[in-house]
Length: 114
Image (cartoon, rainbow, N blue to C red; front, side, top):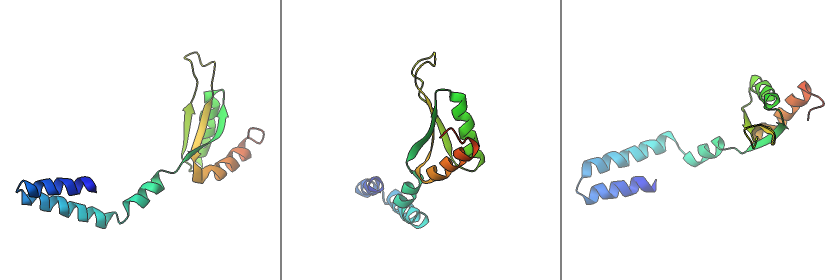
């Protein structure tokens, strides 16, 4: 928002009124389309939480695949520390809002895992 205002002011200061009008018009058009962009940004940037981890990355991929098949967004983060895969774990992360449902799905498919 501030960047658009600065560019518009520079255009006006440089006696380039045409580009300034276009920039200001673009700004108001975006405000009409996206009424409150900060709310949309907050909705898209939910926190991710770890719901499953395993020393075997393929197990984490299977769990993530099960969650994806149920319509959840799941990401595998491989935290193996060496190229030889001796240390660390692979984690399955989901959005914070989906964590409870994801745990229920994992418990239903693998009762002893969680």
